[in-house]
Length: 404
Image (cartoon, rainbow, N blue to C red):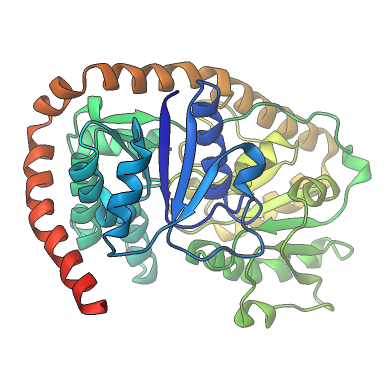
């Protein structure tokens, strides 16, 4: 039986983050091909960490900058190692290369961190993004990680285009793997059975917090036109500053963690997501389409999701237009029902699991069979691998010696 090792930045929390849900999707793809899977992580588990043992995934805690990892990875002897984000590859990639040189190394970016960072900088400086904004330390680190790996998973078509066209990364090193949908939930409450607006997102993720601040700005104007409506803001890890925005009189309600996203979505009439910046695909919008909840978002929020298909609601980055469209979508039954159908169509045409599963696993199998020639063609990756083995390795060993 083939063996996949996943080295996680954190233990997956599918009810807290889209990244947690995506990780379970990737696990499912490998399990369907008969892989045994072990998940390694140095982070502490939380009360909301998914119990991977319930889906037959073995788990092992590991330590940062500790040679005990070498013994663990050698003993497990994987065919494939997947790094959860580039920071994990930086930490453990050289150890995997030294101890399991024939294992296929796969990087899951989740989203391109350098893109999100560049957009955050320009958002906070209130200006347009220019090319130089990309070229940060995060960019250099993430790019080096991509080249050191045999395959990198890209979640968004926009990011795939950015990587191959703007930065000329050879397409053989990349694979487009978005969120995957196994089913669409059409048996949901109708327009007349729903009320209130909803927003959702982990409060520890800065773009989500900025989205809540945008909503606070817009809400009074929406509430003025829809006096009976409330905005229910859900999200894991509510901060104190977020709690201070809670206002019963205004109908702006900070609800905290949603025990069931599906249940919360089924009661709400419209999802509001004025996302000012970010990267990758937005899990909240993906789930809304799956569950039949129309939404209003920005160009940034919808990026990479609908292709040339109509959105399941509206896309606008203008404040006044966002407010107008929110009221319109909330009030117009015909418009709402059309938006819901548009969402189902986007999922059906662009995110069904069957569209991606076999292509991805075929790519993994082909690379394993041709690993030597694949690596020889990626000579820049070999150079970076050599350099990182020298620098990262000895820095890690120095930290380990210092800690002991």
